[in-house]
Amino acid sequence: MKKFLALVLSLVLVLGLVACNSSNTATGNVTNNEGSQNGTTEPKVEEAKIATEITSPVEIEFWHAMGGANGEALQKLTDDFNAANENIIIKLVNQGGYRDLFDKLMGAAKAKQLPAIAQIYSNRLSWYVSKGLVEDLNPYIENEKVGLTKEEIDDFPKLFLEDGIWDGKQYAMPFNKSQMVLYYNVDMLNEAGLEVPTTWDEWKEAARKLTVDKDGNGEPEIYGLVLANNLSTDIAPWVKQAGGEIISEKEDKINFNTPETKEAVEFLNSMIQEKIARLAGEDKNANVPLQQGRAAMCVASTSSIPYLEKDSMEGLNWFAAPLPGYKTNDQLFYGTNVTVFNTLSPEEKLAAWEYVKFLTSVESTAYFSQQTGYLPVRKSVQELDSYKAFLEEKPVKAISFPSMEIGFQGARNIGEINALDVLGEELDLVFSNEKSIDDALKDAQERGERAMQEARNN
Image 1 (tube, helix red, strand yellow):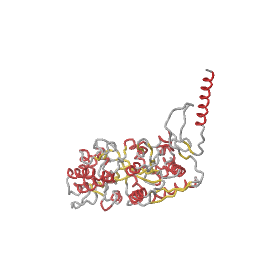
Image 2: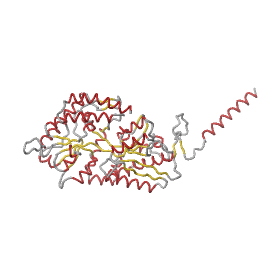
Image 3: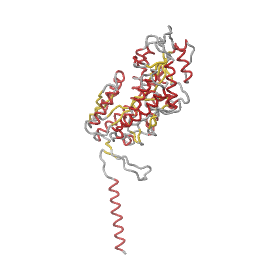
Image 4: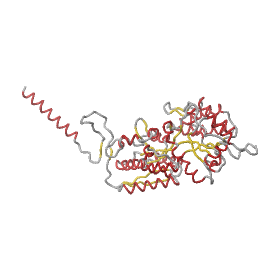
């Protein structure tokens, strides 16, 4: 019996030593983010190990599509970051316009030469996520040394943060966000005795009263409303306000041939056929006719604000408001995020995260918003004295904050862009009076489903 007890005690001692040794393994500059609260140990799945310190110089690229004042603001922020981080160099690579950027990213992915960081829409990032090419940022966000606090995470507007989440993993962080809004000529509305429209009916009536066709030739000198050429991508808020959803991310399907989509198209088309509204056409951007006094209202992104400020004719008195509502008052927000690809070394990934964290900090997003037409991606920016003073000078920049509570961003299904291109082609035929709405939406649904599937097969 004594020998048996001695054997048991020996086994307990050995197991205790093994356990102690396991819990004190040195990790150097790598952490697995494990820990416990109040001294208790809870079983948990081991998290991915990440670097938490950079010991030698790292240079990585950030591919983007920011030009003009947007590019200058991004360069200033990047220069500040590089100056403050001696072991990190972020090299900005402007790839041209968005289409150019996305084409080059796809080519780089197929050639296995992706950059460290990229600016990208989530409906395009979905493909990269599905191929396992994107770094999950949660281990960095949750890390005590290099991460964010709960207060900092909660400081991001929910709709912006969720735009970068797939299956609970944060694959992207919000960067340049904007809202689709209604711009209007204040003096024209006042002279017509009109209030800013808040419903579809008021909007249509305002467009009718504000249209000026002096010689009655059907080609108004001043249109009541100008809409963007790419209505296939912009139609989402009107479909949602009609009670539908142009693309269902949850059900993974397009909803082009539905009563709600038809109602939205009928509303827009009725104004176009009545010649009280038109597409931007050769003006390219809907804000251009407004800037030149050839339109009383237009629908465009808040990112157009700098162009309205700089290029509007002398004396133009303009402002903006949320889109008029219908059955609901849903408001569309859009814009890109920044993502980190996982084809990097641990230290390169950490460098990329540190830059993303800096770019989305309160101070950085406040500066970027003040220098561009984009919205800050942190709620507490509104509490900064410097930003309050900025809003006093430019109150139009404040109109989007209340709408964030009723805002949404588009679906992120793989291949949806191809389907929306098809919808755009069919809508052009409707607006040019070459095809009925019923036939166009029926064909858009059938062609769109094929285009979506073909994109997924490539």
